[in-house]
Image (cartoon, rainbow, N blue to C red; front, side, top):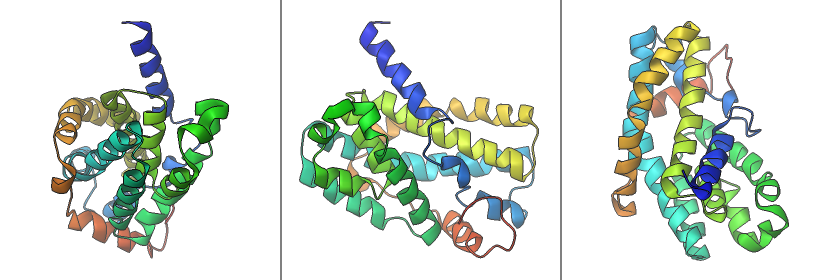
Length: 231
């Protein structure tokens, strides 16, 4: 492994770390409501829920948009970055999903100066920073572009962070044992390369998802009586 690749993977592991202060651990993305209704109740159903989310939403919507924003930022097409970010934000179907994405984006943007040094404001124009501060996926992609991480490496960091949070949420909510959580991680991490490859080959005009069950779970979670996770 050459030094540049090694540095890229170290940055990716840092971005994927649960210690990164962006608050993803505070949200279940509908999983808590799925557990409340009994839709998710054991290892098999938890893995199926997370796998469906990975294949139907992450591969088809989040990562293709991530890649489009990343490519625009890499090329310095700032108006395109802003337009894509606004379009992605409009796809957040519930108040809960919008709040999660916005709060995580603001936290991510607050880290830009640490990650990019004093040149952060030069690497990304103010209008871009203001725009991506409203959507986490966009902020993540813009940071990876500014850090010159290869797209597959940056996507891997995004997916691992999301997957880790979802499995940890399932461990708490179902509840599952830690070994069961690791069982799900091992099963689903094998899917990640194909998910990233699909995203890299999905044109933005073909990207999108219609995960109705997820949207309903997220909307119902907003009024769920007892909750561990934010809404």
